Image 1 (cartoon, one colour):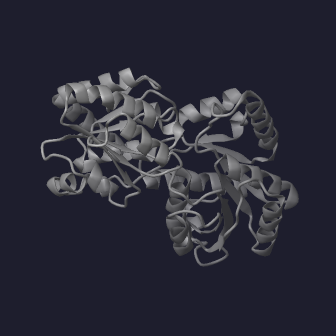
Image 2 (image 1 turned 60 degrees about the vertical axis):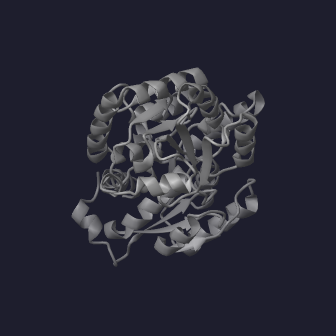
Length: 386
């Protein structure tokens, strides 16, 4: 595998290996969070990480704080001018490895291998999503990914399900593909105390409300419309149920309109982007994910670490975190009736939920830690560079 851990660490402050991370957005999401976790750990292990990303989201100031350098670069839509700017940056700063995060970033990083001979390229998918495209666009995108795989030294998938799909689509080379899951700090979620009554008052919920929480970007892939459909039915059976949507995104106005049209304004609140998710997880009686597909969702790992019972759709990513009837309940996706039945089951079986919660906390401590994720990533860098 190359150099030992001690040898890697000895590089700190002395000829640190230089890596450039590329992402097409600094808005809230799994890829920016993964990048931030890496930046916080990189220097200890002998890596100097710079970041090329547009200043368009909440993560940009954090990147500035922890990165060795920043390149504020607009990359959507695709720009050959931006590609040339990346080439200049790689050459000027002696970058040895480029690590792209997400499909858009990958379309910049892989061509750099041709433009900057000698560099190594690692690509992380953070979700393989092709269903959102029409037939022609999908065929064109798949052609690009299959061509770019020849310019990739190592592929990283954040879950086994994502790896299986990438292999099926021909996006990766099996022998150069690693599964490295996202990681969290379980203690940051398990040891939180909270004044639940104050939060209920803030959101206008009754003190005896049964609170269903969802932390997600407001976009189609998160299945929020199906969740609202389930809530319409759930409220007829349990009028004291309330839904808190934590997050923001391109579909916020559409979601707000749907809430109003369905007469759910009293029972459903959109909290927007929040920094107090660990506390909110303690307010929720149950956490729900209605996603149509995921990479490896941070929010589910956080819910498990917090000891919050989980109901999630049985899709790639979700099923890589939640084991049905052991650490949560998996239900059919794109199906408001299935989500409704899952939420009813959770409400009606509190002892079962407690069992899921205890199993989930144990799993989070053992498997979903940022330390474990980072050490696996360092092994990849060590292998690819040396």
